[in-house]
Image (cartoon, rainbow, N blue to C red; front, side, top):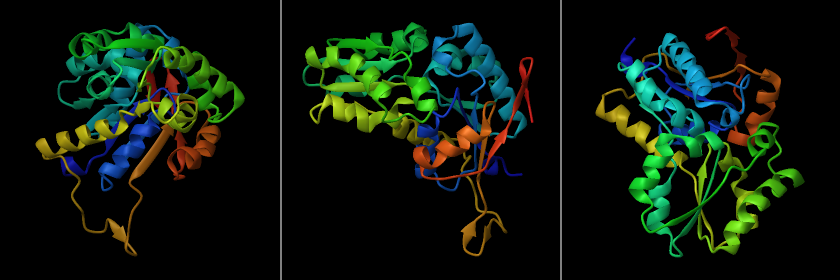
Length: 281
């Protein structure tokens, strides 16, 4: 098979990375995608960096076995814990990770006060520290880990009272201090942007990094001549054959039920199992 016609691998601890998956689908609709949600271990944000690094390396090996040509670490925690080591361990593959959008926030803020919502592991990682050091000069950052928010989103509780309480507790002190920009440092959080906007109000800009990540995927594909090329027989009755595979290590039916709400699509979900530190169908 032509290398460019192999799939792009995308992984996250759960459904959060579907925000990135959706953006890549919009940016590069012809590409084949394999998305893996490690819901057996969600949330990653409360785990040690070593644990997350171990999961990420095993998932990468699995996705490479599926023939992936590029891998997107669609998880801020996994990017913070493992992106550097993944690039060293698998030099033959291109990786795209999640970087907290401090730079664009610093560029657009007028008050000079920016809120950052992310998991504890993301805040503890060297990647976050590096981004802050490079781009946050002269900007005051207010941080919150939003305890319980990832679990609420995994449960499909996008508008519930408990989800609102978590976000209000995180955002209210920031609003009182004058933030005008909020950075979403977890791929789960874009799914509650409407609720964030309700709480923060129209004057607070919310930065979702997913579109920028999708554009970076597109740039890497073009630079390395890895774009999908139409093959004979890939279109039937005027429609492309299914180009998406969704996998979970957790509860398949629960994942399936969330798809229409999160990405407006409903592809079949397949189950993958952990055996020790390896993944198998």
